[in-house]
Length: 316
Image 1 (cartoon, rainbow, N blue to C red):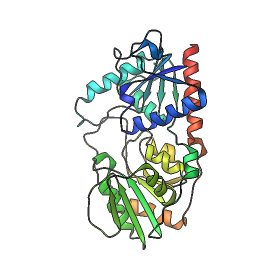
Image 2: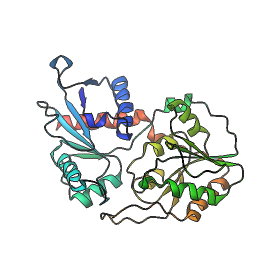
Image 3: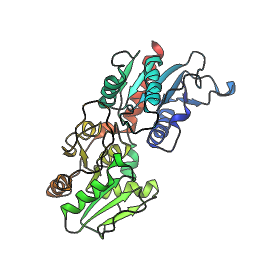
Image 4: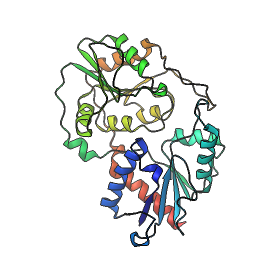
């Protein structure tokens, strides 16, 4: 099988990170060949995998089947050209031969806000995954505190970094620390550390040693950070909207702090009451260094699910 990956799935953001992991697994386990689509010497694609926004003309390659990977759509009215971007997503869902949603929430969001529910040619839901062999080979870091919490939140209001920090400080757990990855600075406190850049190997060590990942992003469809944390056995403290609670299930602590009725919102606020997050931090501490097991996120399984869906689309 020859597979072409569109440029919008080759970046440094979350979709690009997972796509690169997935491609490695498809090549090594299923013999898939990644082609460029620009030179006949590389071979013509059988499948074109696209995402984020659909570009019909850029990847029209003969008889190749087009599969569109969807994490959701634009719901925030403050987003520039929101309607235009959603129009591109709608076009991708309706014109592709197959659609992969990252969660049930992302499918429901597209159906409710774009009006495409049930109109896809063929669709499935496949969560992101992580390489279990990396989990097994990763060594823990040397903790300098009893209770270690981590968060992956840049200064973006939908990530709610202020709420995470304020909730952690409100909990006031003795001998605890919160590490904010992806942030250069923030409120100064002896229990908070900001780490703007870190290599993957060291980050994985933190996953394996942390007591919880705090992830309060408003409407994430399928966060790589959440999947990675669960894969490493780390519970997740999260909010109750989007795909995150669907993924976390009973492997963490869900803060009932948000409402979403599948309508556009003016702007997402970063003001969750600190006591609500603090309660989940205390619940985590009461569970005494709890670890979780979520083998369904193994990347080998995700690659098999993608490969099977590719074959299904090709047979059609």
